[in-house]
Image (tube, rainbow, N blue to C red; front, side, top):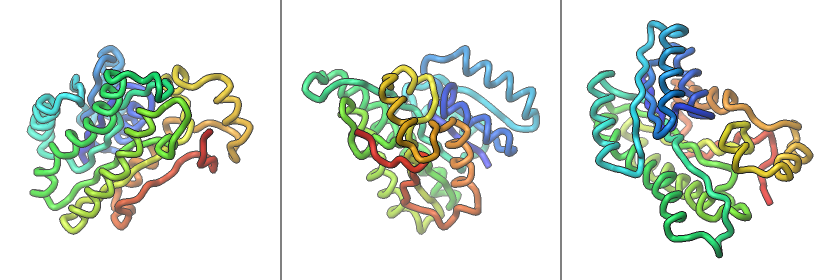
Length: 246
C-alpha cells in the first residue's frame, strides 16, 4: 500500500514511517521544521527498504493550499495513496483562563483544522479508487485534562471528524478510525509532561510503563491492513489500561 503520514520526521510519526516501510509499503511523509531528521529518515529508508519508495515534503498543515499542493505531488509521484495517517500536532500547557487567542488558534488550526484539510484533500482520489483508510492520532487528553484546554479540545474534535468520515464514506470503501494513545515516550511528551505526571503514570498504569512509538506504529499498520476492513468509526485506546487522566 501507499501511505501518507503527516508529522513523520519525529516521535510517533517517524515510528509509523519506519514500520510501514519495514512491511514493504511506500511512504510519503511531511515535516514542518525537522528537515535534518526528515533527511535522516530518507537515508535510512534507502538502506533498509530499498524496494520501497519514500519521500518527504515540508508542510504546514494549517495552510490548506499547501496541503493541496503536497497531496497532488504525492499522488502524482506514487500513482495514488490508500492510507492517510494524520499525526502532525502541537501541544500547549496552559490553563484555560490564561490561554490567549493566538495560542488557541495555533493548536486548533494545527491539530484539528489541519487534519480536516489533509483528509479532504485526499478524499477525491480515494473516492475514485473506492478504497481508502483514514487513521487519525488523537490522545487520552480528548476526555479533558487540566492545563491543556486547547490540546484536549483539538484532540476531542478528531473523534467527531473521523466518525463523520466513517459514516459518509464507509459505503464507498473508505474507513476512518482514531487512535487514542496514553503516555508515549517521545520528545514532545518529554517536553510537555512534568516529572510528577510521568511518575503518577508509572504508579497507576496497569502495565507499569509508558508506551513506545512502535506500539502505536504497529496499530496503525494493522488498521491499514485487510484484517481491519470491518473496523470503522472507532476510537481505539492504546494506553496500557490507564484510561483516565487528572
